[in-house]
Each structure stands twice: as structure tokens, then as C-alpha cells.
Length: 183
Length: 297
Length: 130
Image (cartoon, rainbow over all chains, first blue to last red; front, side):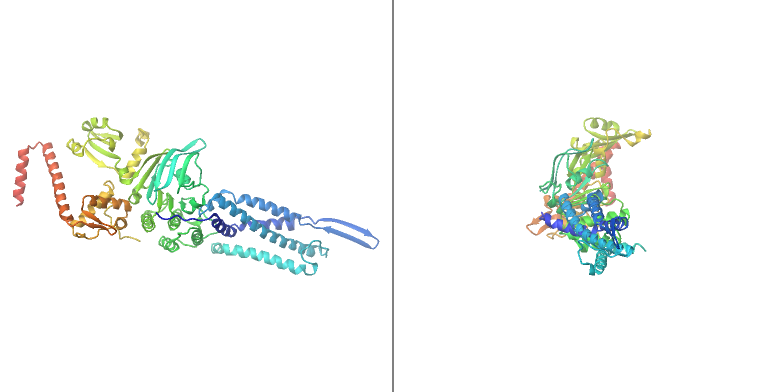
């Protein structure tokens, strides 16, 4: 009789992660949309308070990153559950897999997406900074910003472009077949 | 050499008993037809063998291991049915690359040739295929993976007749080129009979018969002749079905319980004829005394 | 992929296929398409030729092997026995004629023809064909 093939769990998990990371990427588009809605458009303008004495008056507003974190955590939770639904699980059966390998692969994919999500978060944060600057037309004191104020314009724009283009490149390479059918 | 061993296997879905105390052994590198009416338990037992579901009681061993959540079993097994699905973002060509990445014996060249022969557009999506095209693609996917255990659950469902003939031959040729255990279920036994080595007949959750094809066919025999000549003969043996028209009786009997020679029968004017495998299946699984005519009487 | 395979086996679904294969092989031997001491088709070749399972083809070959119409050469396969053709012809003659004789006698009985009348009829037929 033919000899049976022996494949390690590690090899299968690696292969599954490779394919799932590419195929599940539409989950990140939902993150971007959520962040834009909640992070930029709907977020409050922070707390404002003012002091005045004589000729000098100071007004300061505090903006925070909280909304982004909350939205991202919520997204991660929902998506993790989504990956365990029947439609996704049934696709796993079409290749060599076991419940263990699929579960481990999903975890790795979520970790990878979390890193990407953080990058997206950072770029959206810079977008928010830009928005405030442009809309409120104020300069501001920045606490705990990654990069010093003098170059943040460039960095924020550049990182936004980088993140978004990387994301769309991934989408495009997956969807090039889809484009044919949209004619 | 047993590749699959089931011992007292039972499976219930809630109150429904799909399989009841099934015991069987399946040898390696044979093409076996799994036959049974709808709801008999065929898909259930195949799903257990594939390791997709767990039995309620009893055991099932594939390659001497429990197939459930087992990478080693999964690496040597493929289950093809109409529920085979892939990500919406993969074209057929991508799916072939997907399969090639996982299955070590994958035959890429052969896949392209078979799909080209069947006229399938490789840039199409799996979800966009018609029923017949889907069945064809899934079958090609299954054959080309060259897994030691290949399970095909109604693989020809939806295919037109011409392409069915071609693909039964494709299954045979692939089996000759790379021997493996192939379990096929189908409702068209007569079409696929010639490529089978054994038949496993399942009815109402139990295995009614498991034998090499010819032995299986020889289980029942048809006797016809004058009613009076047949009457006493039939009373001594097990009768599966009988029709009496104008003094002539036609009956299906159990061969092992028939102790008269063919010559003796001929001298009484009784003719003996063999049944096709699907006829034997029908008689072995039909309900006692039930008949479609009874509904219309 | 299309065509090229024989339809001999498909037509009769009640006679066991392996018997049909054995019959076909005997036909080939009588017709001199398979010569004495020539290598006979393997079960895989027969499987491909007739679109049947190789185990079934193998059974057909085994029947002939058991009747010593074929012999095995270790590691080389199965070959046609030297006297296979004559033995098949003799066997056929006996089988066919025996069967025909049985039917003739039975039919005569049914038609209420006596044994002597039957023998006279046979003689007459033989004379007529001379």
C-alpha cells in the first residue's frame, strides 16, 4: 500500500495563516470605516476650559485617543467571533486542517491584524490631528505625541498615505478578479 | 489491510437515530460504492469517517487513528460533496493553487487538462458556477489531490449524462494511475457499477450488506413460471417480492435459501434470471409489503 | 479521453462482469487474436479496455487460470496455455450441444412427441443437410 503522508501541525498552521491573512483582509476595511465614523466624525471635541486674567486668556481643549481604542477593541472582539462562524469554518475543511490548526491559525491572523489595526489607528490619529488643525485653525501643545510638532504635518500625511495604500494594495491584489466582473 | 474500522458505531441527532450499532471494516485501495436511500445514514457515516463529526457511541478508526480533529488523518483524506466551499475571493485558478499548496500529491497539470476538457473558465468564482460545473470542479479537485482516502458523496449530482460517463472513466483511470481507497455514494448505481469492487448497502442506519459486487448481485434471484409450479417452492424459501398475473408468478427470492438445481427448475417450466445490482438494492431495502400501487388502489 | 474503449461489457448487466470477461478472453483465444504462449492482458489493461474495476477483470483471469487455459510465469504475468484453443473448442462443443439437447428433449416432451419420433426427426434433419 502507498505510504501515507506525514504533515506536522506547524506546517499546516503556517499555510493556513498565510492564506487566511490574505483572504480575511476585508475585516480590516470594516475597521477603517468604524474608525472614520467613530474616531473622526463623531468624536467629541474634548473638554474645553478657559482661564482669563487681565490681558491674557487661555483656552485649552483636550483631545484623547480613547474612542479609537474602544472602537478597535470592539472590532477585534466581533471579528474574532465572526471567524468562528460556519461559513468561515466550512472553508477550512476544503484543505488539510483540523479544528486545532484552524483555531491557532485564526489566533495568529488576529494578532497580525491587530498590528495592522494599530498602524491604521495611528494614521487615523494623525488624520484627526490634521482635521483639528484645519477645522479649528489652532496650533496646539501636544503631549505624548510620537514625533515632534515641527514635522508632524509631513509624518501624519505620509503615514496616512502609507497605511491606506498598503491596505488598498492588499485589497487590489485579492480583488483583481472581482474587477473583471464589475464591468 | 483495513483502512477504516467502525465498531458498534452509533450517531443520533437529538431524537433521530441516524446510525445504529454499525460495525464494518473497509480495505485499502478499493473502489467501494456506498448505496442507500435518502436518509439511510450514508452521509452521516461518511462525515464520521472524515472526522467532521463525532459518533454518539462506539468507535471509528481511520488509518488506525481517531479521525476527529486529527491532522494526520486530514492530510490523507479528502471529502468531496456539494458543500465544498472556498473563499469568495478566490477564482478557480486560485483554488487550484490553494489545493496545490496543501496536498503533497497534487497534480496541477492534470487538473488544468481536466477542467479544460470540461470547458470550465478558470477565472470564474466557485459561487458563480452552475450545479453541473460545480460538481465537475469539485470532483476534479478531489481526484487531483490524490489522497489515500477519497470520499465522493454524490459527485455526479447535476452533471449531464455525457460528462458523467467521462468522469466515471476519469475516476477509474486516476485509480489505476494512483491506487487509493475511494468511497462513492450515488443514486445512479447502474451507471457506476462497472467501476466498483465492493458495495456497502445502508438502510435505516444499519449496514444491510457489504460484499464484492458479484457476490452482492447473486444474493437475490428472479424466478418466473406457472403459479402452481412455483407455489410450493416459494413456501420453502424467503420471498422478497411477488407478482401474480394470469396464472404466472414472478418472484424475487434469496439465493442462499434456494436448494434446487437450475435444471430441475427448467423442467418444471420455471425460468431463472439474474437481477441488476440496483434491483437487488431495491428489494433488500424496500419496506415490508409496501408498494407504490397500493397508494393508487 | 473520449472513445476508444470497448462496449462489450456494458450491454449485459445481469451476467456477472467477470464471467463476461472470461468469455471474451476465450473468444479471443479461439479467434487466434491471443496466440498460444502469448502474454495475455493484465487486469489493469482489461480494466482500462472495458471500463471496469481491475479486481473484476482479475476475477475473469482467475477463472481461466483455474481452468488451466492460462498459466502464470513468476514476475512476468499470465500467458495463454499451449493447448488452450483446442480445450476451449471442445468445452464449448460439449456445453452448447448438451444445452441444446436438453432444450430439445424438454420441448419435445411438452409437445407430446415420443422419444422415437424425436430420434426420427433428428435423423431426417441430418439427412436433409448432407
